Image (cartoon, rainbow, N blue to C red):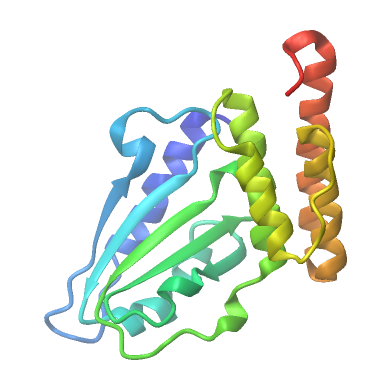
Length: 210
């Protein structure tokens, strides 16, 4: 998939979100692109950062979100950042679409009025750790970023020991530890390991070793 495909995904997501109207006659829904895509500095590894402003309809918008996103493409995972789960004015939601590159996660900030907290069941420490591996792969590919910090936090999330060794061996170990801690994440762990193995092949081809 190309950056053009990612742009089409952004356009489609923004379209369905901006078209949503809640039950309130005063309800108004708008979207805004954030992050590197907004600043024009995005590369092939960049994720998608959006803000969805929903006014007084925060809870209704959050309930409608899975169906709205599924109208764009099948959704593989929707997680709510625990730090935002009880806030009265925002939710931060991480979304993975089935079949899309793991690097192209949608980070959606929903801004509005919320009366209800979100259950912690939406958060998987193992999936979070695996996405840390994805972020570490992106950092290595770009030649910048806190690879060590990403992996250390990932091991801590699943209560596993961070072994000594190269970045790629630690990525592989973290993927395996995450799958052991939560068998429901085995398929995601396999896909993350495939990305790690692809990096290993690139380094063997002469691009260097971290």
